[in-house]
Length: 84
Image (tube, rainbow, N blue to C red; front, side):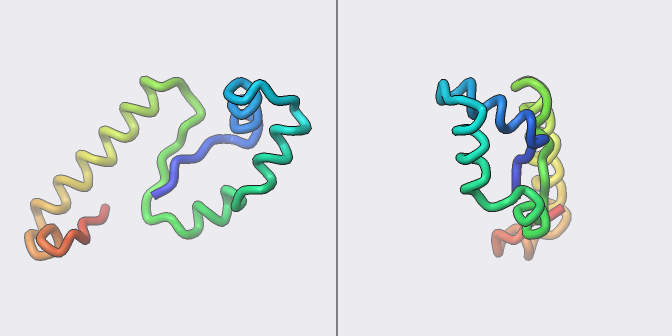
């Protein structure tokens, strides 16, 4: 599972969080695994370009889907392998 946002949103959030310059924020983001690589590995991706309420709604939908799937596949749920 990966939570992702647009590159500009990510840089802006790093600057706000750390009080860093744009150059410092870009370096911090560049030091991480690229989002494209994270998305390729993820079974589930949650967009996070909006506000916190929107993120909570997206997470709730994913959790609801995982729970519903695990209930429809009791063996997978028992094994802890519920997926969408």
